[in-house]
Image (cartoon, rainbow, N blue to C red; front, side, top):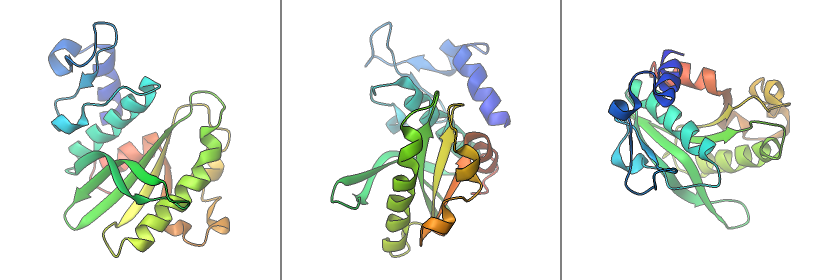
Length: 184
């Protein structure tokens, strides 16, 4: 939780955003991209349809860095059922363990909620078929627009998915608490 509060404070600029994070030259004055000091240079996010994905990725990466994990953002890990490439938001490693992390933001009620089961299926397949390459996968739910949050984080999908145990669904707060302590 401390990492989450620290990150939010840095984004607001209360601790000197210009000192902690800086606008990158890739963006213009009104749409600069943030580069965080704890993150690797590869974390500089590309412009997306919405900045919430970039912010969420930065928050997760920062918490993981505090917990001693190394992270690689936006990694293609194979193909999804149906043949399309499967890209995860973060791949985090510590010691012999490597985790796949998918971040989902839902500010208001919408379609992200309906995509969670398919993401769990894709991640479970990647872990199962990865021949030990991936230890486990996480789907992290951020934002206040989730109507099925309690169902998802309470294990509601487990009864419906054969390999669902390979993927854990967490709230952003729970993920940050585990990640910044190195306990994924």
